[in-house]
Length: 636
Image (cartoon, rainbow, N blue to C red):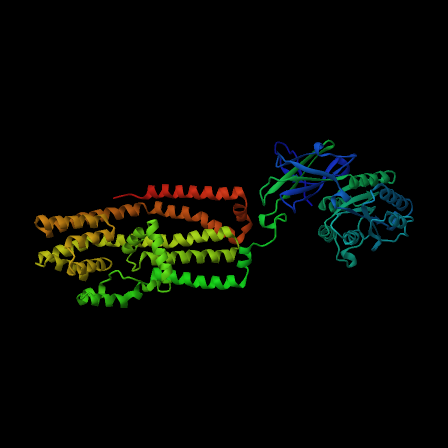
């Protein structure tokens, strides 16, 4: 049962208040709004004095926007929705004589005025409520039960009567209680009863019953008004002379009801205000649109993908792929030391000196880090990488990051990890969109980690370059040859420069020209300062001159540039941190909402406008990230 929105003016303010006015105060009244088949909405409207209502006479507005009315039908057999009424009549001592006689006469008049499809039940209450006639469609039986009033007794069990009347209903029809009393409740907690006004209203709410109360004579107006208002009914004060008129009005109110259906435009999970405009008047009410997963109008047949995700095979597959994905990531990030044995064998085969043998790391044909990946998969990934142009890019990044693996192995591990992430996400969320998002993230994360690892290693090489040049210059001033000076770098400078210069010295001793070995070293590091230093060394070795003095000058210049670069990074640290926070914050909030209130995010994935908003926000985030990254990236 919905509430009704009334605008009440207090001075200059216009606050909103929910209330149900008295029955006789308006001719049009919204009784119920059914959104169980959303977006199709059914509104039950009671119209007094109407003999017929067509769709042309009905105008419905939802949130002040006109909507298309699909049908208008009288409530009754044509709508497969009946109306049930329980007449609860006070038979206490205060009703003895004319009041009770008049009440029964008005009740008989009520039964004769209502259509035959309205089911009626009779209940009387004095010290205890008593069901005189269960709810039935046989009006003759009901009139027989109302032929003569019963004897009266002391006490008025008003709350117990409401609770018992609420339990007389069955089926899915509209439920109404017409409560007639001339006094206040005289039974309750003082008489060791657990039924009070709150319990009585709760029983009516549980039964989805509406209470229309009629106060006769000196009655407890506040209580009757309260129970009617809390159940979205109405209260009428009547005397003996106009009791028949009150019952006739209630009969018309229940008989002249229409079921108006329309197609809602409200988004899922939002509040909608419905205004019904008829020739006899206007009424306003509201309802809450159900969340997408709670809609009844959608098909409930599970798809093949949903059946797979809910099967035991999905659990076994998920566990297996999760293990492979975890092993793949651990191998990619933390398993470089596993290659020590093979590297020693390769160094020994190259006949390198002991110092070089311990540090030489030539690129192998295969990697022990990815031994678990089948070679056909690696070969297929390598061919795809060559065809798409990813092989060259991946090989350069692997060289700069110091990871001893081939591009095919890295890309095969990335594909397996992304598929495993998508399968885990699909099993957990049972949502294909979430699974696809995790597949994309599973493919991007290894790439991002590889780029960050290569950039971090390049910064370490950049920071060690002044020390490398000073070691070479000092060795040459001491009388060592250029090759001996390079070998001294492998002994005096730590990683990662020692590894790169060890490889260069090994290549030179195996016959590669010095210029080419140094140029390859500069390309592997990806540092402009390394390239300039190698270019200066190669030119100086060709034209002659004091190479040690040149290297000291270059080392001083690079050291000053590195100092300035560090200052710039310190000054731009706040901006770079803001970029990270602003980029991750939407994803963190979305993840939190996905855990605590999944309905809020379901609209984005299950509606067309939600998907458009997702794509648009993703594009705007990419543009914003590129813009912010450009602002905080300063080239020195």
